[in-house]
Image (cartoon, rainbow, N blue to C red; front, side):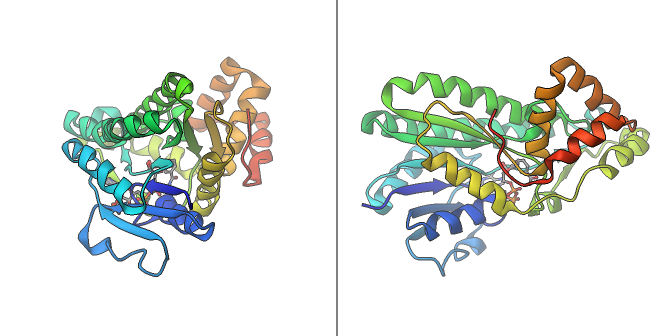
Length: 288
Ligand SMILES: NC(=O)c1ccc[n+]([C@@H]2O[C@H](COP(=O)([O-])OP(=O)(O)OC[C@H]3O[C@@H](n4cnc5c(N)ncnc54)[C@H](OP(=O)(O)O)[C@@H]3O)[C@@H](O)[C@H]2O)c1
């Protein structure tokens, strides 16, 4: 029997490319979108059922898990991909924006995971793949709240990986670097007027960031995490910067890395930093 994957947030980006990749390998796919207008986005693909799900609606998760299982008679992999990007200086964001960011990126992910855990535990198999971010490993400026939400996802995934070990169930996290997806066209901006005080520093920081690589690179890593049968492997780094950063951190050690990162982020990258980061141009996964 073909295996079945559930993927959230599939109207664009990593989710869309993952649906296409899993389907091309013969998987059954339960793909979720949150807008009715996107329900036909996968119509051309065989063995893909598209369902509506807003991950903020925690009450809906139990019924959704049942519905997902009913589509193809079981679920083998859950990919918690849905998320969005809150950006701006901490001082300028509202507490409501911070709560909303955690609601979608963290609590929505936890709640959907909880809905699938009894299914995976009882069948004594299953892989949960959570999309974190390279910014989980060291908080990026002007996206500190987003980075904190992704750090929560990373820690949650590591703890869960061990908790589920006795049941043959694995939890893994993907740490993508910057990818060119629609997420950057839907940024939730910190709107407080004090943001003006940070404008120059923000321009300096974001002006040095790359444009981002193709989301297909990370879809490939998600597929690898689903199929490599490395039950204890949690961390998958993807994209040029996602590959380079752990490598640089290994070479320099955590404290020295932080000093170099901070200098680079405040507009004074050292020559050493520039040469080390440059080594990461190949879009391949870097295993720690
Ligand atoms: N792009 C990057 O550089 C990058 C780097 C690291 C991590 N990530 C993470 O990767 C994941 C996918 O992002 P992406 O870059 O592929 O962006 P994307 O194209 O915007 O895809 C995100 C998807 O999540 C959906 N979504 C957002 N809030 C939702 C909610 N409350 N309920 C259900 N679905 C929701 C979006 O739906 P709508 O289409 O309706 O908005 C969209 O389909 C996110 O978790 C993101 O944080 C992205």
